[in-house]
Length: 244
Image 1 (cartoon, rainbow, N blue to C red):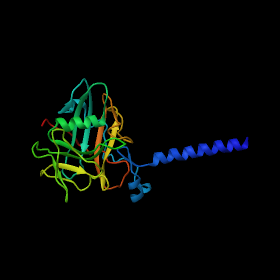
Image 2: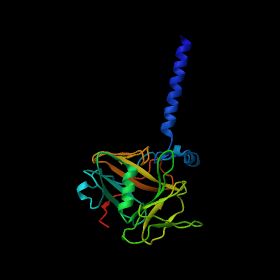
Image 3: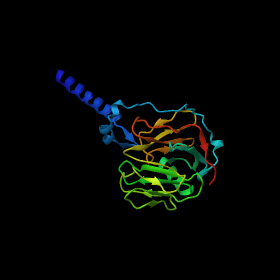
Image 4: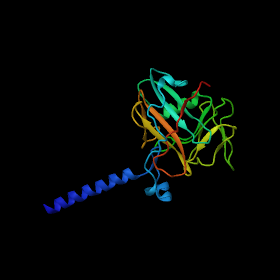
């Protein structure tokens, strides 16, 4: 009997350790980042979300000026490039029933002629968002460049696709465009909430697995470097982007 209790206790201990290990894996948009954990000693990094005088009622759906998609249900997305002088933009998203975070972004990229993304879609964890850009002036090419590489431009879909996580080092060709991107030197952090009264939480899943429900909010903030493993919430004030 003692041996049985010993075995059961050992199994329980191993299960607990395994569960804790799973919780302690740092993830970027749901993608495990053991590479960054080893390089950056993530154990000493902050686990507190940077809220920048966060107000959960920063903007209402009634204040959103530009909506993409179609349907009777609504959600919203807020994006902050964390550049000097850049504004934090909010878009509305229309759909029926439920959607996903990646469907929201793909719809935004296809319908707003100012917005474009750098994506690695073919991964076991779903699409990785490596870069986002917007031309605030509504004009200009949706293209990016990198030393030693052929410039890449988004077509009508607004998507620039890569076959790897090679997101670092790209920059926008159009002067005045907001562009932030990276995977090893920084990353797009992803926060979600399912209504307008709760706080945003750092998402442990990527946009492909995120279920969008009526009233949902998605938030993307670019974090340069690795000071935190829970990312950056978009900064206030949040601006309802106008029609193109």
